[in-house]
Length: 94
Image 1 (cartoon, helix red, strand yellow):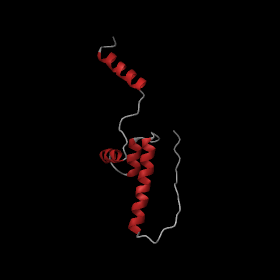
Image 2: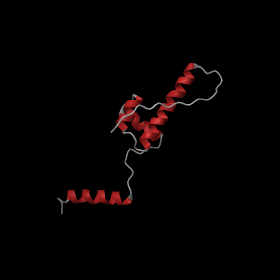
Image 3: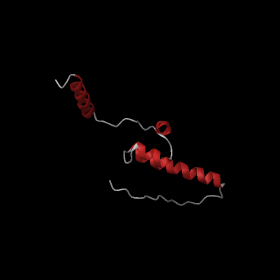
Image 4: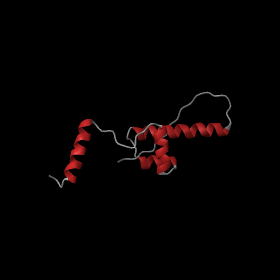
């Protein structure tokens, strides 16, 4: 997969801000951007954790706060197929 650096910029007028407030807002904007990409499956959980400099446990909690399921989205047909395959494997392929 081709990886390309992405820069996100936006500009709007604000009154003078404390530096700590600006940094917090930028950090939250970066977090939200990464979590939306994760939610849509554009990046992996491992990549999201790496970009956010957090471990998988912290990412799991963050995913919950963004209402992102750790399980892949499947159609009913895909789920039935997966369950059927699992049952067949447990039965020894019969």
